[in-house]
Image (cartoon, rainbow, N blue to C red; front, side, top):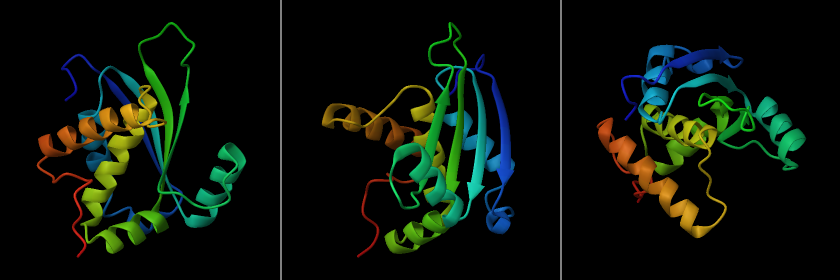
Length: 155
């Protein structure tokens, strides 16, 4: 988990307000802080499928909404502060949680952790990177008292 000296500057934007009362700023902060390996300046934006699709198409060339997008900044700077925008698509989040038989907050926690790790340079482009990132996500979820996000709950 985050070392005591790690600082988190967090902005939460509810472009899609449907989950404002479920995915509260204190919860999002708790999940983001759990994944910090250093200090960070993060914006978490909750969007609907239309905005999620537009962002994914414009920045990744993929014409569909996805569950989480991370836009990391300042990677070339000589700073130890991770800077990123993390976009959660509420429509996809709710759909996946229902399909996977997972509580919404647990799925959201996993996606926030996933996005924060991306913001700090983690990736899953190849099998070795994916294994490392998934292992760290599982460990962080366990520390938060939540189950392995990669274990199948749906039957």
